[in-house]
Amino acid sequence: MKKHPTKFIICCLMVFVHMQISAQVNDMETKINEIFFGLNLNQSPENITKESKFEFKYSITQSIGGNHHTYSTEIYELPILNTKIKKSDFRISYDEMELEYGTFETILVLRFENEYDQIDEYEKLVADYEKYSSKTLIETTQNEDYETKSQVVVYQINKEIEIPKISFYFDQSNDGEYPLVISFSTSWKMKKIQELHKKKQ
Image (cartoon, rainbow, N blue to C red; front, side, top):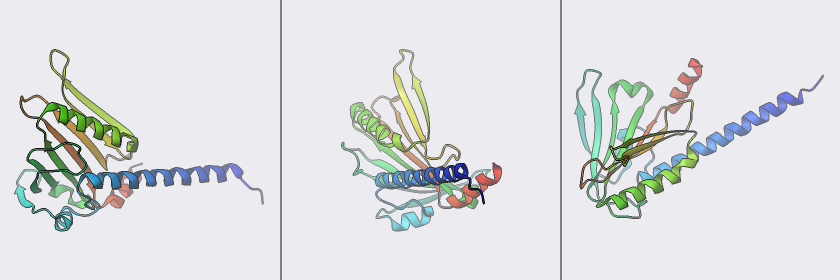
């Protein structure tokens, strides 16, 4: 029987690429968990809050498209930062209409004393997570003097599927306020989302 070395090589390359992507995803998940206090984000928001040391307030906002659920708490420090923060927010939220695929968002709204600390931490985070991205989106807002007043960088792990993704956003449009927002969108039903993506291809 005639062998097909070319097919064998292609097969090996596909396996190798798959292993690289899987390793990249695992590395980024570990890195992201460090931001969010070491919590396991591969589970439902309810289970995340139960695992956490924080006391979350639970709220529901009614809307035409379905109820929006939020778990929120206040934080006063974040171990991964080199600078101190003022009273900040930690939120986990999801829409009822997204329950089928388990998508949700984990958000940190960090508030700094000054713009130097804000930008220093923003640039450090953007640089640290860039290597995990397979697709990067950047949006910048400037004033009439061409000074950057806000910027958001979005890192998508898989360029073919919108989530998981992490974004870093800073805003200097309000004097005296220096927020840095870290947002991570993911799902506790990723296999279901991946299967749906395969069907659409």
